[in-house]
Image 1 (cartoon, one colour):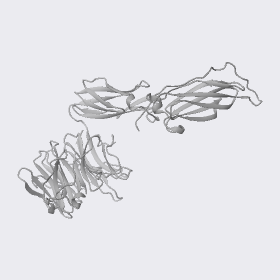
Image 2 (tube, one colour):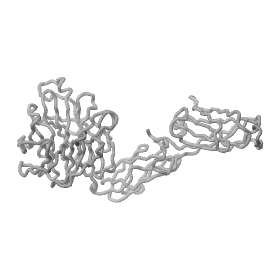
Image 3 (cartoon, one colour):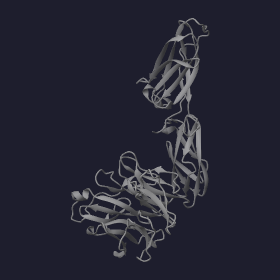
Image 4 (cartoon, one colour):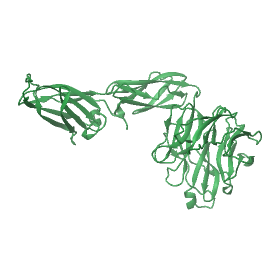
Length: 498
């Protein structure tokens, strides 16, 4: 939920505080009463927009003796709480403001005031509620952004200094962002979120302020000329009945959930500049289509729609429910290769990144899947077959198709374009682009993904306990290590320098 906050509320006094109090003793204490009048300011102000009820307690020596709740009147204005049968003497009134009626939610403001009760009299009193914001946080810590790219920051306010303090609601329009060094990084903010744009190499403090309370938080952003870290994109169940796209660093830190919802968002693929992710999703409701989004999950766009793939002049029912997957970007980021499966067969197709220019590259009857675009943009590798598969490469300029491996599937070009990583299901192997120099890496694996420097591969394994896990291995076959929590099912790795 977006945060809404700080407020100082004046609960107006009606009349004056009496000057004398009763005495305490062993005999039953006489009683009096008190009246609290609450002014609810116009909703154009922050406080009423964020608060819809006030809970009031009267305490005698720190022990609550009376508790009442006042909900905001529908028309605003004033409401009155009468506190009857209060013991004579010096008491204390405590009040908390809540975002929901019935004193539900996290308190947004709190206040205390002394009150003196006289026998048989009604005391009117005033109370001021102050902001509960103790700290503003800016996440994630220690972010890095490349010159010309953006990174997303989030601000949040808490009721305590510790990171686990309860959130305080802050109205989106009450967040103010600025860069202490705009020559290095600039800020484009909306509410509690801000895009930081790298301008030149260096460091810039990015500051977020809740303008109602005046409390600020900041984080230092490092701007580099080239990416210094790599990230893995992958899919896993999201607890909402679907699979989502996640990213994290190879050391397991910095995990971010990029998509949400009860959809099957799978098979992520980074663009060459790592600013966008293509993936397959059933978001349309029937079949599945290729979607593209920014690396932070914004700008989601569906780029494929069912079309006349078999060329008979009509989009048949089987084509309307087609299944698309395994997207692979062209090196210049203008096109996406992908597989299409429908009743007519399976084929490798391409589409422009804006959704135009659909084209089928392979015959439907040959069952071609898992395309991988070469780093120089000249060829696309793919596998052919169903149960028994082989690996082929199609040179785009001449439409020449060459068989590279008699068996294997899920081919993936190395960053230098010299080799392909493939799997038989029983073994992960590397092979030169001309079909020579095949080397097995000694692990059973699926869906390999190269590290940006070509020194390692990520891949999927099926453990004996079920599900799927992500692993790393060096390109020479050494150093196999699990990347994921064994209790969590994860699949479809993609690796990028970002």
